[in-house]
Length: 173
Image (cartoon, rainbow, N blue to C red; front, side, top):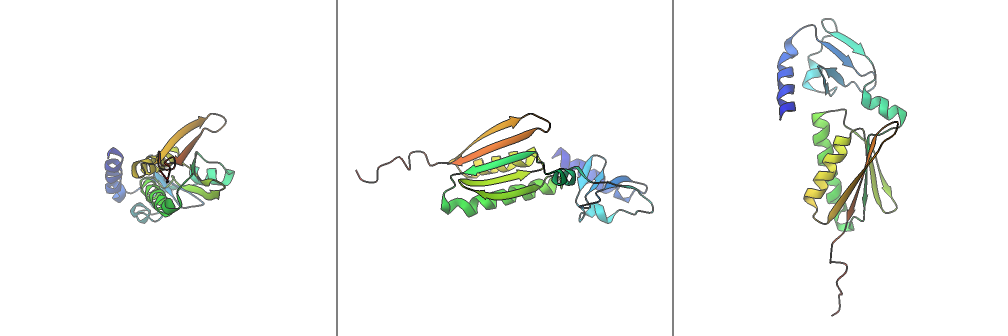
């Protein structure tokens, strides 16, 4: 809530002239006073390049994409076939909510693997939000996260679906 309130205050400041901001040369995202705004946001409409001080450089998300890196990876396995579309919907909603708060949080890749699905993102926060959303909606899922330290830190989260007791019960008794 605090973040939203700060953004609201900054949106009120949009009428000020002489803003110092940075514009991404690749995606158009705008950095102003510690926050990132999407290129199609209300904030973007307030920019006047004649009156505002605008620097042009690539944003952190675009640099990460260009270098082929990611901040987090989510691996989802053993999803029952009848739940796949529901899981995708939960992922989409969580990702959209996170992106709305910060356009630097992006899903980089979403692929099918032999035993499930892999998702990479520019933000550990996005991975955590998707993880939490899946666990909140699906009782039959379990998660485990591992942090890899190195040149670039990386969070890897594994979510597996299991229906405890359901598959272990004998059909004929």
